[in-house]
Image (cartoon, rainbow, N blue to C red; front, top):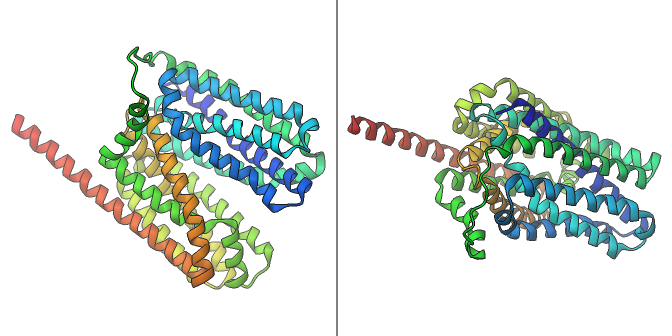
Length: 413
């Protein structure tokens, strides 16, 4: 594939990541400052999550009606227009929470339809033997921009106000539109127009689910993602704050140190994955298993630890383990699905992961209240260990499949 195509996609992905952080921070802080209510401020992320969840259900129907490139660009243009409209109307509707929420819902719908398409672009732009390197570079950029976004957006709002900062998010989205349009052009030659046969709506919706369940690699990797989604909620801000206060016996400043060290570890891990990309590409399943196992042990140690400086070191050490697992899983998933089916499979997977994550936040909170904060991290480490065990199951299936192929080949000869 053309290197230039991925470069433009990388630009679009980076712009979308940073714009998303700025957009969330600006509207959340604005709604809180205007209303003085944490509940009203929480409506923004709540409406955003619900709309994206609903959009994921209907995404296959939308994908069936339009070509990949055409739909990808149109949805991003729609999102850019909505955000531009919000910026223009902001001085007049800023006191109307209901109208702000309507904009949020519409923008979230475009994201829910568009994200599976954006996620599935990488295998279309990158050769199979370069997927690990591509995913690692995207991960490093995304983590770095999230740190920058969460660190500096608050400062920009205080220094320049909500409106100029929101304009910056709007500009970034338009940059992503241009970059996606250029990247999509490199794929058009390989696209096939949708066939004229009309499928029943239910058949269209179930295609992604059916493919997800029937393919053993996809099924196991998705179950691993779901289990790790449960474990991922142990890093919710409120849980980390309780850990800092009750286990480390430190103030809120250490809450920031813990979060910063985790991001630093993730960036370091992403850079290491870039260096080791060739090795990981050839050993996806073993790397997935090793990454999960090490991440599980470090999480358990973190939960049992009471020394602040050790907690910071463990957070940094988790970064490479997490990135090794995540990049290997992402690449294995992308490599197991036909390009045409990948957006629908991603849409189905996103529904499962968002549902599991939403439910597990409540469960993890209940565990913290009833059994103590240490038990949260013990449960998280057990979940990740189960995921590691599934990696070894996947490795066994892979070896059995290879042996079966060799056996059929020798019989044929």
